[in-house]
Image (cartoon, rainbow, N blue to C red; front, side, top):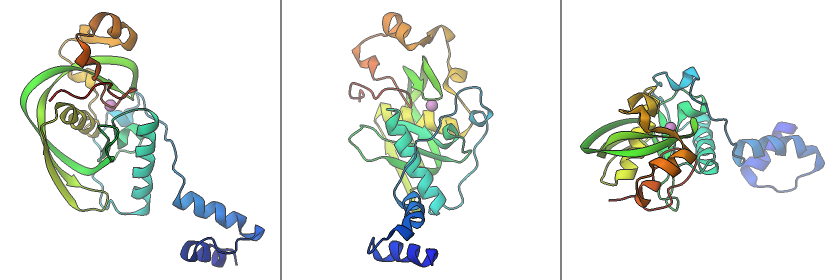
Length: 221
Ligand code: NI
């Protein structure tokens, strides 16, 4: 009977719920509408050092739920990007949202090519809370992958900040954390000390990548 009631709720709307349906309602809500904030892995956990595995089918219920939870987690942390290894899932999946008014973008199994001149920029990472470091990266990327419906997508971005987000998140899929590609570790700092001593100019304040604060300024183009 309980399963019949669940089917009715799922297929026919809330209808005439009774107290007998409370357990089913709980189950249905969990499956359909509640998103969860996920714990974020921090530097030192091996999941952040592993090469993540491709996702065979982005359209499964498990993947849909994972994507929703990742977006919720990213937004709650005021990040602009999040890669699946950061929430302990060693999968080739990343999400980003920038500017914050834009829809979140989902990319499974990305292939990213970087080009253009390299520029230095202070990055932060949700897996390395409280710290920032200067990382040199190319200013343009092209990418291919699959969207949340499993359809192939591709694009090119000339936006330096989006290019940086994509490279930073793609690094997570390859087990790379930004301090390991810094050229000068004297440019690695606690954020408050960075604010006092290393911040170069107002545009450099838009230097978070997946970490802690949305950029306060538009990215330079
Ligand atoms: Ni990161």
